[in-house]
Amino acid sequence: MTAITALFAGLLFSVGLMVSGMANPAKVRNFLDLAGHWDPSLALVMAGAIAVGSLAFLIAQRRKRSFLGLPIQLPASADVTLRLVLGSAAFGIGWGLAGFCPGPALVALGAGYSKAIGFVAAMVAGMVVFEIIERMTAVKRTS
Image 1 (cartoon, rainbow, N blue to C red):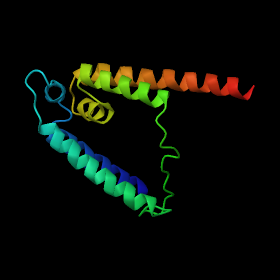
Image 2 (cartoon, rainbow, N blue to C red):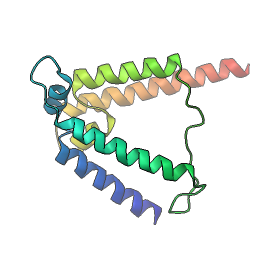
Image 3 (spheres, rainbow, N blue to C red):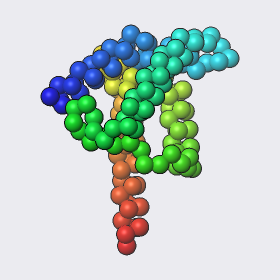
Image 4 (cartoon, rainbow, N blue to C red):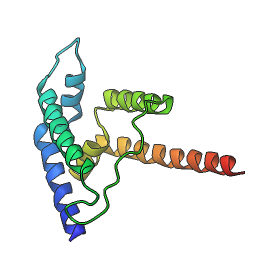
């Protein structure tokens, strides 16, 4: 049941990203181009996502288990660290340059957009490098 629910949620999310234009790099870049031909339509998409996410977090904070019976794992810290700020900056720069963020990039790749191939490859490479660095620093901390 969990896998079917996850599949349905992923498909619904993918359709929402396609319909809203979040998987279209040109539309995203126009949204980020405040000095040029600014397209504010994605602000409504983001406002809706923030509203839904905020409601979900409020509900999750009051529960120990999800509606499917799985344990709820919320972030343990709300601290703003240098690591968080640098990661957010890297995310924003990549989003602005490529016009993709991870979810829409995967949707665009699945839809056959060739521009998504390079982004997804770079994203996966960045994730691998991050994991290698994390494991190296974990080993140094324990020794």
